[in-house]
Image (cartoon, rainbow, N blue to C red):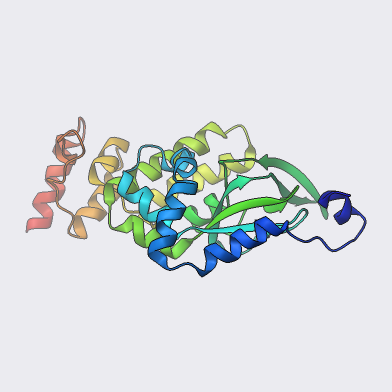
Length: 253
C-alpha cells in the first residue's frame, strides 16, 4: 500500500526513511557544510525560478545557503489562506494544490510543480497569503524566511530591481485572473507610494516614468548619478532628464 492510499484510509503517514534521514542530516550540519551541499543539491533549481531570472550569482549563492529543505506528507497544509506572509517556498519534488474558499467551500484554483514558487506574492507584496497550499503527494520544498530574504536583497539594489521587474512581469502574465489583476494594481500603487520593501534603483523608477517615487528616493538621499549595468543614470533616461534634474536642484538647496 502506497503513502497516498495510507493517507486516504486514515492510516498515519510516515516519511520514507531515506527522506527523513536526509532531512535530519541536513538540519544537523554546520552552516558552512550545509552551504556547500545546498549549492550542489538546489542551486540549479533555484537559478531557474522566475523570480531570480537574471540576478547575480552571488545573490543566488546567499539565498540557497539560507533555504531550509523540508518534506511534507500528502494532504499537508504548507500555507494557510490569509496567514501572515512569513515564508515562501520553492517546490523541489512532488506537487501542491492552490486552494481558496468560495461560498464556504474549498476550491482548487491552481497547482504548483517542481521549480515553482508558493507564497511569493504574499511575501513580496507583504499581504496575507492569497491561497492555501496543500501537498498532493509526498513533496520536498525549500523554505525561505521573508526577513532573511529581504536582508540579503537589501545589500544589492541591482538585484532588488531585477526581482521587482520579474514579479511585475509575472503578475502581468497572469493578468487574465481577476485576483492577479487586482494584485498587480495594488503592487503598482505600492510602488508609487514607495511602500515596497525591495530596494529599487533610480534607473528602474525613471524607466517607469514614476516622477513621484523618483522625487521620494532623491529626498531620501539617493545618488542621482547611480548607474545601471549599461552605465546609464536615471537623469539621462529619456523623458526624465528635465524633471529629474529639477528634483536634484531642489534637494541640493
